[in-house]
Image (cartoon, rainbow, N blue to C red):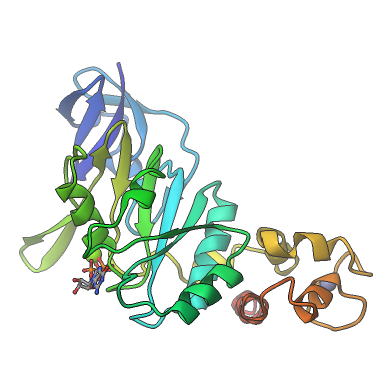
Length: 277
Ligand SMILES: Nc1nc2c(ncn2[C@@H]2O[C@H](COP(=O)(O)OP(=O)(O)OP(=O)(O)O)[C@@H](O)[C@H]2O)c(=O)[nH]1
Ligand SMILES: [Mg+2]
Ligand SMILES: [Zn+2]
């Protein structure tokens, strides 16, 4: 039979198949270390095979992510370099990103307008977890979705708000103490036929992710730079020098957000210095 791994706790897996849940261990030749929540697997009494995996998030370990909700708010102050890194990460891993502005009750018009302008080439959702105003996000939960975003932006609050509405949900992302170590059990929430995973903090991105990218590849993960890239004089243009650079022209004319461009330069610098080691 085939099923989806919806929970992993050490070497015990919960696999969902045709609305039934099975608690399974891997067979002798399949190693627990190589199976993740989100994996599609074949099983009999044990998990015998992991099917093709399109992507894998390291922290938390979740495989086969279709959509990512990048949550931000006016408070805590957003780190837009991190937001842009997540967007690059999504482009690299075939994940559809959504910018989610939460805490609408606290966000000023100016803040919202700026985010909408900076991320005009992305899908933007506005929600308020405390008011239960989350329908626009719920309707975009398709396939396997993950919440991302820095600590205290309200990722868990949004999930709790969904939980209070009439959607059917199973599971939670919880920590259990085991001696001195804190083990994280990763679980997927089921919402209708789809799944949602919470994450804690801004855990998934560090230099190791950025260092996998070549300097000249980076701009190709910016949909807002696309039109400009076609007009650069040099094919190898990194868009750092203002001479016949189509991207810089777009920044000057306001077609590309200045903040997006400046943060692009910062991420490019990080890639350069990571390559030195
Ligand atoms: N005013 C307001 N506060 C909110 C809203 N959503 C969440 N909060 C508050 O923001 C704080 C952090 O919310 P969490 O849901 O724990 O944030 P998180 O993103 O899950 O944080 P981590 O798990 O640390 O990554 C809590 O005190 C929430 O009550 C909202 O829409 N409006
Ligand atoms: Mg949380
Ligand atoms: Zn250029």
